[in-house]
Image (tube, rainbow, N blue to C red; front, side, top):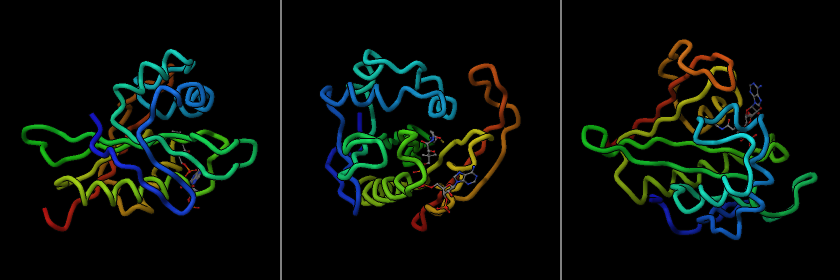
Length: 179
Ligand SMILES: CC(C)(COP(=O)(O)OP(=O)(O)OC[C@H]1O[C@@H](n2cnc3c(N)ncnc32)[C@H](O)[C@@H]1OP(=O)(O)O)[C@@H](O)C(=O)NCCC(=O)NCCS
C-alpha cells in the first residue's frame, strides 16, 4: 500500500497515484532494457500492457507526469517513484526507488520528483532512515542520490546478476537528524 496518496506538484511535474487508465502509457515508456537492467526483477522486460495492469493496483509509488512535451515524448507519464517502510527492528526505515522513461533522462526530473517525494514523505510518516540500492553500472542513479543528500555507505561485491551480467550493489543512505 502506498505511503503517499495525495498528489504532489513540482515546478515541471505532477506526481500522483497511477490508475489503470495509465497502463498503456506506462507499458510504452517502461518497455526498455536500459531501464529494466537497472531495476530488480520485479520490473520485467519486455514490459507489456499486462505487466503494467498487474503492477498498478499493487504499486506503492506515485507516477511521474510531465506537464510539457519532452523531446519526442508527449506530456504524460514518464516514470514512477516509490517507497516502502520496514517492519519490526526496521520500523521507520524506508526503501526508496524510481525510474524514468529513457526519453526523459538528463533533464533533472528524477532529482526533482524524488526531492518532492522525500520531502512529503518525511512530513507524513516517521522516518529514521531512507536507503536506496543502486547497481554498480548505474552512476546516474548514484548521482541523483548524492544530489538528494544521500551518502554512499557500502559496496556489496557481485551481489547482482541481471540479464546474465554480474555487478556490485551500492548502498546509499540518508539518516534523519531526528534519529
Ligand atoms: C537513474 C535515472 C532515474 C536518472 O534520471 P534523470 O532524470 O536523468 O536524473 P537527473 O537528470 O535528475 O540526474 C542525473 C545525474 O546523473 C548524471 N549522470 C548521468 N549519466 C551519468 C554517468 N554515466 N556517470 C555519472 N553521472 C551521470 C547527470 O549528469 C546528472 O547529474 P548532474 O545534475 O550533476 O549533472 C534514469 O537514468 C533511469 O530511470 N534509469 C533507469 C532506472 C534506474 O536506474 N532507476 C534507479 C534504480 S536505483
